[in-house]
Length: 417
Image (cartoon, rainbow, N blue to C red; front, side, top):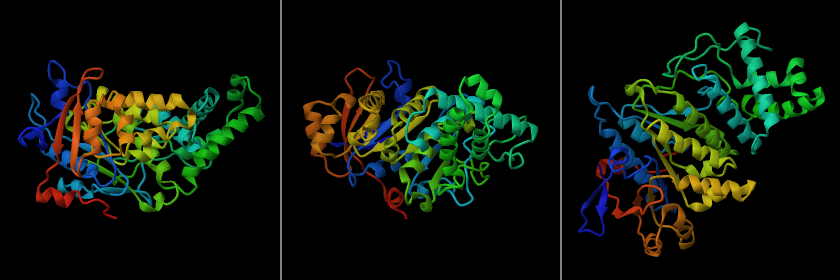
């Protein structure tokens, strides 16, 4: 697939396909993931959109016939609406009646718990300790038993939403975050006895967890994740473009974005794995700096890179610069080191113009030389240094100028709101 003109070799066309390079022998890439880095106004979003558009136009060849590649986009501002409509898909705006249930009954118990723990950690803005995780598990199990028995405290069992290609488990009614919140406030005496803690100790911890969840059930972020999954989501489309309603981005933009990324990461680990026609090929996180501001950024990034390896998904991540992931360092150097180490495992970097200080921070991550740093600092808009290769080996480098057609130019215009 053409991605631009080679600026160092008679302006020949440069071709690139992470799926092909991953499958080649000897292997050129150890994963399909892509990270685009550069200052605002240098063409990151334009490159991301045109690369995705061109990739989706190319079918995957399978023994049983060709299939359309598919993408899920975490689209904070609705910038990919034109791309989605080009492929006959309507963007879905999350909020005000359109909801994703992080405890959707078509996820496994382990996946529901993974989302639940991640959500509470993000809401508290810290890592959970062992006893807090035990309280969450106890509340989850208690809410699950009550839902099966039809004895939810304060309401009737939730109805699972249809129109999704996740695996159904019809034996268990759908849980919601509010079910778990209520259970945290009424943990059983049996649970308290098993923890070897006093009732006041359990109540103190459980109430803090419950009030964190309440922020999503009755607080300013209600309507995003506290109801059954809305049938407005067309999971069968070639593009699933999830936009966040601007009302929910007024005060806690980073938190909303982080919650959505965490939820979708676990969903993609379960969804569309059995049928090739339903499989997702791309997860696009265009404004990754919002996710990078999470203290748990290292864990989020690990989820994404695992998707690239275990599920064959190409995760496309955009950052302003290394300072984005370093903003996750409130927990200390260990957190920053984890994020840096995981970025070093990304197979492809698309590096646009940035300050010399930022470029120097990428030396170890992208295996850059002095010449590479000088090149990045001197790049013009829509020019980039493409580095790819197996982790730990010398990366292959290409100096590329991004070129687009008139039709593509209509799609890559940013700031649609």
